[in-house]
Amino acid sequence: MTDRLRDAFAKTTEQADPRRLYRGIFEYTVVLGTPGVGPLPAVVAARPTDNRLPELVGLECYPSAVVTYATPPIVTTTVPIPGATIYVAFANADPAKPFVLQHPFTRAGV
Image 1 (spheres, one colour):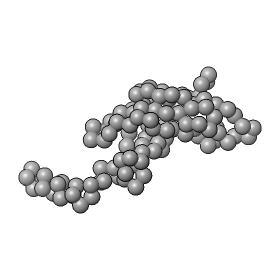
Image 2 (spheres, helix red, strand yellow):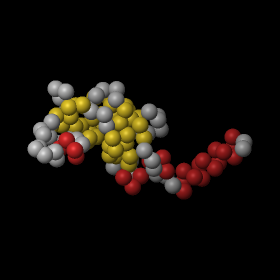
Image 3 (cartoon, helix red, strand yellow):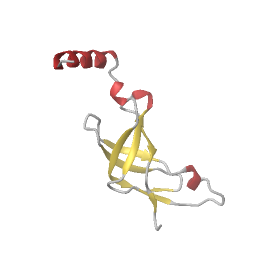
Image 4 (cartoon, one colour):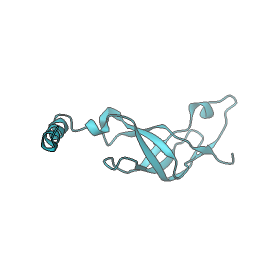
């Protein structure tokens, strides 16, 4: 396939589905964050590994249900690890609706 044909196909595909880029699961790197306590989320800023995606600021990362709802209840503090990889998806392929699927945070003091 020639470059010209490939570029025309890519442009047509983009016009047919402008949110196509946001369909999938993406790796982001945690840049900084504030800890969450108990059921409250940690809040992080993250940079994508794919430079076509936006940087995310104020992204909420909720603690694991296992930790939050353990019996007896355990009050923990989740701490974002700068440099860690988190996995992000976008609800309805909407770039304004990111959410974290998985994160490798540690509990404070552990």
